[in-house]
Length: 73
Image (tube, rainbow, N blue to C red; front, side, top):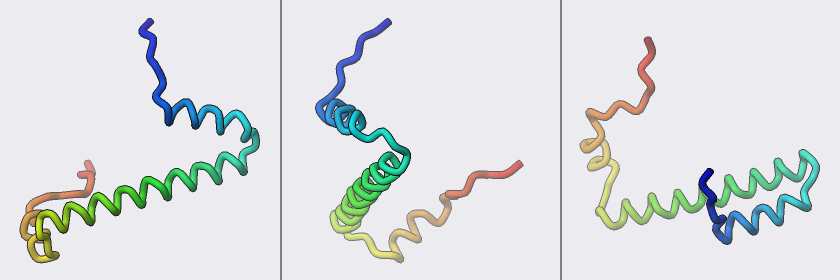
């Protein structure tokens, strides 16, 4: 068995989770984490658009042959 060290964020979350024992607290914490990562993703996306001088037209041209949907059988 391989031993893995936890990073500081993981350790902190474990400490936080030790105090939250009910389902409502867990759901609230999940929502906070979800919103945090959504914000980070938006910031990275905005940064990429600026760095690449992207416009909607350019983006549509680049992705015109890309299919984002899962193919159904």
